[in-house]
Image 1 (cartoon, rainbow, N blue to C red):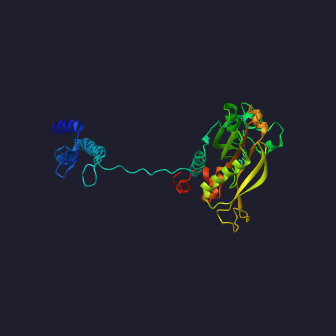
Image 2 (image 1 turned 90 degrees about the vertical axis):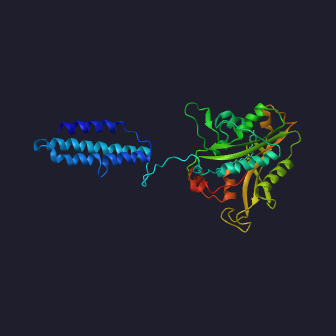
Image 3 (image 1 turned 135 degrees about the vertical axis):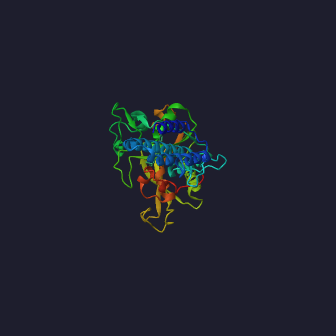
Length: 343
Ligand code: 2U9
């Protein structure tokens, strides 16, 4: 019994020191300790030589030893990642890696980039500004003084900490900052996110995206406005696109006009998108109000300008037939992966 206990202690030390360097040496360990003619089996056969009053104690020691031998084997097996066939599944660094699925551009990004690209070819450069604006740049400077009825047209998110701060309701504030900063000629395109306090539904959202544009120089006319916007829609929708202008009102422009294109969905025969008129509104525009030029110290006798604004989601709807505004911000990959194509 004494001899057996000494022997077990030696085996314990051997097990503690064991470091198999691969599937073969781990298998050798298994055969030596846990095989059918292995050490554990042999020790159990020694039970018959142990005196009756010691059998219980020895049995316990043997069981603990067996568990140690088994758990050491399992631990090493896991560490070496040995497969069922007993082979180490070592990493082959020469194998090609798993290809990560490629993301796609968001449809709003695609359409925004297309718009920017088209106006870029006409010499417009991109201008950006803060999404948290002050009252002056978002409203007052744009011919929307306090109590102006046009302010009611937009439900505004105000910032609690300062009643003068708000989330911009249009990107017109970017044009305002440009006029403040630079002298004519000014030829900018201003894409960006804007916020309005709307209940979210398929047709309305509390944020959306706009692209506005501004061109101020000497001798800028309504004819320039018309031809620029006609070129734009031809580039975006194809040369066969037809346009029409309708008189409108914007506080920043006078005269103002909305531009329609012939419905791309039904080709003019009438559908839900064009409300069976054959025409869909695509943007608003007008000649910059002289008062606004003066607001920014630009001589309205010398300079004139035109401006326009459009909703990117609206154009997306026409290009991709997206019928629910909420899809743009839900980040559902089944929706997002449908949009491909170069700018
Ligand atoms: C300055 C001077 C002129 C910006 C303009 C529009 C017409 C317009 C809306 C259409 C639908 C945007 O997405 S929408 O809500 N905008 O129709 N915006 S002219 O005119 C400016 C702005 C700033 C300094």
